Length: 393
Image (cartoon, rainbow, N blue to C red):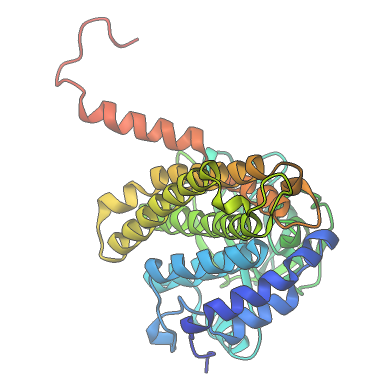
């Protein structure tokens, strides 16, 4: 039986994660105990389908979870997000072999069981932008032998299952997702992650050397289309965009809360009263709060509409990510500007929040793709039935 889902424990979990986040950030160490807390509250399995005994939480609940965890430790939140998204995809569109998913849930009943899709490669970059993976699966008896290197593999050292995007050595070639146990012979994690933000996420390289994968443990194996591996369906894309935006809005919310506390505690001798009583600081904090309130409200509203099956909401999720992450980054930047040196002092968490929130810009879909797709959609809606002569090359 899966751990009971206890969303009421989110504030408690957030506080506990926040108490350890600085140490893991400094060391670049993986927060195993943080995932134990998240697991015990039933949060790691919140999106498991009811048919499997899970709560079957929707995107609106997932957004709330990730915002709260992001405020505590965004590295824990990010790996949790990947796990929740994987279960949610299986809930919507079953694709895992029954035995493999059953084994996964049996493990998740007793300990944190972390999941992530490993797709990015040195040569390929993100498959969303096109290209065949260099990771190759070769037939080996009744199974596959998987070899290659994946980079930016979030949570690599703690993953129970890796969903590895690879191609076969067949003619014609096929691409698919191969289910790899993290402890399989031939799997090696190389500690390459040395970013300024989300340091505890341990998004290291994973090297696969002839890793055995049973022939039935492959999802979506098919000949590549125009863009192999390509863009997720709109609902999957909405889960990714809105869930991760909520995570970084949680980071920005934590920065806002620290700022408010600092302004109350800081009493310059020349002023004789807390900075919180100074009108320009009141106005600046009001600007931060208003921006975050607007972004939070947008994300929550779209998530609820996606749960209700609204295709327009799913289509707008990318734009919401752009607006929400810009609001999050701007809010933390403004907090740093307001407090000066204090904001960049290692003893204060604001500098960590700043480094972490900047990571929001690298997640798919990225700003340029969002703006291009949005612009094309608008222009397409207003395209005349017959284009003016000479308007097309």
